[in-house]
Amino acid sequence: MKLSRTLGIILLIVANIAIDQISKVIVRAKVSPFSETPIIGDYFTLHNVENKGAFLGMGSELSDTSRLIFLLILPILVLGYVIYYILRNRTLDRMSLIAFCCIVGGGIANVFDRIVYGSVTDFFHIDLGGVFRTGIFNVADMSVSAGMIMLLIASFRSKKN
Image (cartoon, rainbow, N blue to C red; front, side, top):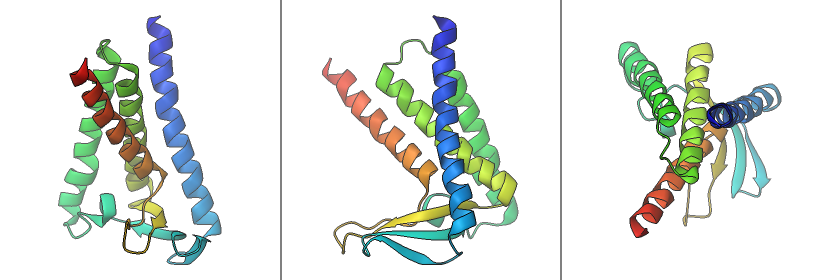
């Protein structure tokens, strides 16, 4: 039983990383840098931008040393701890476990980009005409966001029980 749980965790994390990295390879190869391609009108567009910062470019103005600490070393330490936590904590409910795997997979995928490319490739943008608008993001960001939403839902579920 122990091996199958651990294997499931590893496979889910690797799947998140793989989907993100494959999407980024395709975007880097097929989408011109700084271009904007409508997918669903102006509501959902495809781009190819390199983000030296974190989520929505936050931290891109930091010095190289600060960026190294806050966008590489600290995330690696946190991701390492979360992996340790989910492997050791057998009381996690299924939704929380999947959520943590999505967060870790997305986090590792973006850290990988920072190590290999010095920036993270972002390419999706949603603009629902002033009702809802995002920055430019990638599949790893969606994975981390979905994981956070699942953790929030799981925490409300556990409080009800």
